[in-house]
Structure formats: C-alpha cells, structure tokens
Amino acid sequence: MLPGRLGITAPGIPDNPLSISWHDSTWIPILNTTNVMDYFSQGSNPFFDRTCNNEIVKMQRLNPDQLQNMTGLEYVLLHVQEPILYVIRKQHRHSPQQVTPLADYYIIAGVVYQAPDLANVLNSRLLSAVHHLQSSFEEASSFARYHPSKGYSWDFKSQRPSIDKQSKKDEKPREEPSSLFQRQRVDMLLGELIKKFPLPTPPQPKITPAAPVKSEPEGSAPENKEPKTEIKQEKIKPPPEKKPRIN
Image 1 (cartoon, rainbow, N blue to C red):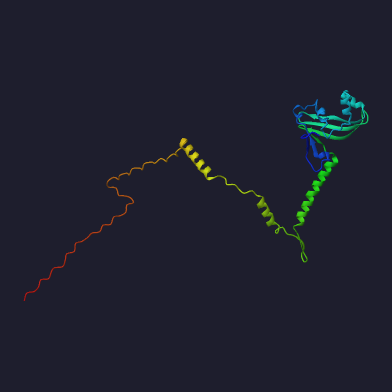
Image 2: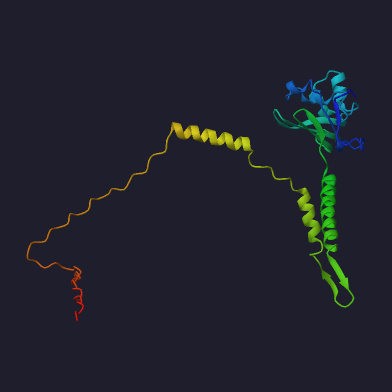
C-alpha cells in the first residue's frame, strides 16, 4: 500500500473492512464515470481483489462486456451520481443471468468506503438502544430508597444538589457585555451623530392672552364684592387739670 493513500479510521481494528477508507488524491480532480472503475482497480486499494475477472479482462485487453460470459468474482458500477457519488458492487457470477451480491462500495468525493450489511446495521442500532436503556435504568435506580417500615420509595432531593453543581460547572462564565472603552467610544459616536443630526425641538404650547376686564357703568351696584369695614378713630380729650386751692 502506498503511504498516505490508505486512511484507517479505527486503528485498533485494521482487519475490519468497515473501519477503513481509501483514496488517491491524484485521481480525485479527474474522477468521472469513464475512469471510476480504473480508479477503484488500483493495486493500493484494499477493497479490490486482484484475482477478479476484471483484472483478467484488463490484462488480456478484452472488451469489458466479456465479463457477462465469464464466471467468478467481478466488480460492476451499480449507481452513478456525478460528480460526488459512485456505487460499485462486488458479486459472484454464476451465469450470464445469475449473480450473487457480496458487498457494495461507495465512493464519496473520491474516498472509498465499504457499505455495511444489514446485520451490522441492526447490530449497531441494537447496541445503541441497549446502551441508552441501561444508562436510564442505572440513573433511575440511584434514586430508589428502601426503609424497613416504609418499604421502597423515590428520593430525588438528595441527588438534586449534585446535579445542580455539575450543571454549574458545565456552564461557561458569563462574559461582560461591554468594556469601559467600548462604552466611552459608543457615547462619543452618539454625541457626534447628535451634532450632525440634531433632534427636532418639540412644539411649544400657545399662550392665549387674558380677556380684558369690563368696566362697570356708574350707578350700577357691584356684584359679589366684599363689604369694606371702616374703623373710625375718635379723639379722646384729656381730663382737665386740677388747679391748687389758695388759702
């Protein structure tokens, strides 16, 4: 295998074909329907079996249509959706009309993967469902309590503080919405905008002049006037002086 052209997505399980991928960067820009089979049949491709009938036809320079008259292992282009998706099937041919599919390979943007079969898909989905069910049962059992006189009960309050602490740890610290420099800068820009575009002055209310006071004609009695009280001051004469008697 050429270095750099085989990408192993799961290094711990290199024998599993579902965990590896392959690509050749020199072919990806020119990949199309006519050369996709030549791209897949390169010797560095771990998914290609060199003992297949395609390699025999290629070595003997025969017409690719001769594959239908041969028996044994072969690869055929099953589906094309240019320029992204190509599907190649590996099958065993028994006769021109009878074949047995063995595996499917899809090429997405030049990267070759092996499509999982139905058993692997069901196995993965079942393992995922069992894992989530087991996690839910374990979490539910942590809230169960037993007392000899009361029996079994649920206690969610004791676990709540630890859950709250964990959620607080996971929360990111809140960032300050703005700094002092940003606020000063915004205030300065707003002041310049107000100078360029002053706010309209609100309309002032109109003041109506007071009505003139009408003069009353002579001889008419004034209405609603308070009576005036006059205080007369009388002059009090001092008492006569007493003259002394002369004996």
